Length: 171
Image 1 (cartoon, rainbow, N blue to C red):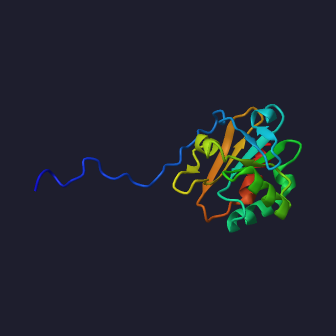
Image 2: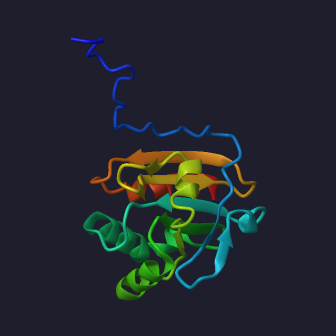
Image 3: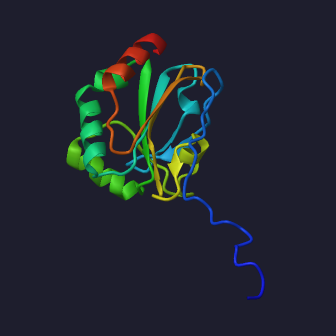
């Protein structure tokens, strides 16, 4: 037999590591289009509101729909004079519009569709194997500083009570 049958480069693991953003540091900027095609940026809230950046995997999926409808039903917790909610997925704008209309979601649903997952990647929550954002939440204070984050497994819904508790402290 000629040569060594062992490959020169072992196959890569199909894993990705979630990058951890540092609490107390500025949150990555984001500027994305919402379900109506309007551009929304994190910077536009600086000095005015704390922001909940809520990444979710897919519009119309069971867990995501349940979560966002639960947020809708408790909207004053997530959107008020001092707090703004920005829900982000890698779905296209048109899918987000249909999703929002079907379920009465009146808060911004932001499309991280193109460049695909760029904002989710900046937050360390893009899953390249699935082509979607992981289920994660970030709370950014009025100065643009990251104050809290939580990552959930894709099939596990968020604890909205925990979000409300943190928002009461930050907002």
